[in-house]
Length: 294
Length: 90
Image (cartoon, rainbow over all chains, first blue to last red; front, side, top):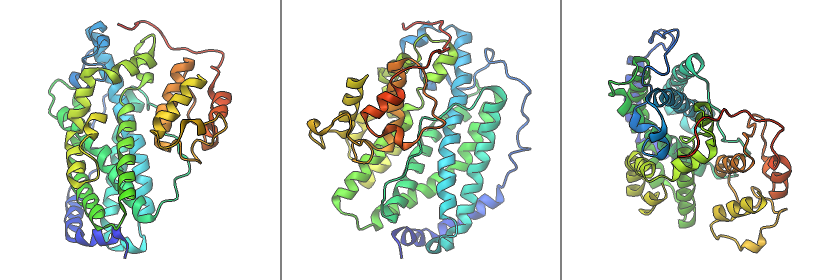
């Protein structure tokens, strides 16, 4: 029995319970939201001000109120695009694990997981294609390393959990932000509600996999390094030069570097990453000093 | 750009290998100097240095083989670029 299968046995009843909740709250993403024909980019807020990537930087002070609001629309599209690209990878990995012989008992929940991720992308894509665009990802698919399957399984679920933990920080805050346009609030609130199950499952699974594995110290250290690098690469994409070019900044790459390096944004990333990092540190996956790297 | 690329690769290798082992023909991914997770940041760096976006739709691992390949593939900006410029750095 693989480490993943052992871990999932421990989660058997738990995943069945999550499956029942998913079935009970099943949703049609094509009818659940009334999409306005157009949005006035300079009249509303689509991302909470404090979560914008230029907030607290010198660039923010230079922007007039309508430009800040337009940035909030562009960054909403960038945030949803990050989710689309992240969920494409996640769906691919989940689909690859469907009906795997050692995971047969958990296929039901994997189906729900996959279904819900696809629905999230319907919302994200619906917003981007109607009111802005899907921003490109610079994540280049290259042939993966030839890792043992249990290592690959751990990395897959740990990356998914880390990515979704940070996304959920944004979702939770924005679902409650009364300044936001109702469409933006709905998308964030809906994503948060469904991701709550995925996050609980992800934490339990990552924890079980880490504890069940018989990896040596070097392998565990390497996994910690890879997760740290993944987190940094994920965060980098929140500072997208393409957004800054669309906003009209003269040096979009310079703005991305300056925003990334600003003290205000460092504080923001640490705050937004705190819950995820705390979990991974307590599990022993990441060293304590990783908080300085983010 | 070549020296910036070299610095980037060495920073990502984090002292795991002697810097003198890195040449412009050293396989970057195959020999473990870089991982796929480093490529988005590498693309950002090259875009910033050449001042234009890189079309990511048709990239493949071979485009990142070594520093010579990076220079051949991405070292020169296409003829035109259209980033509307209104705000300058504060």
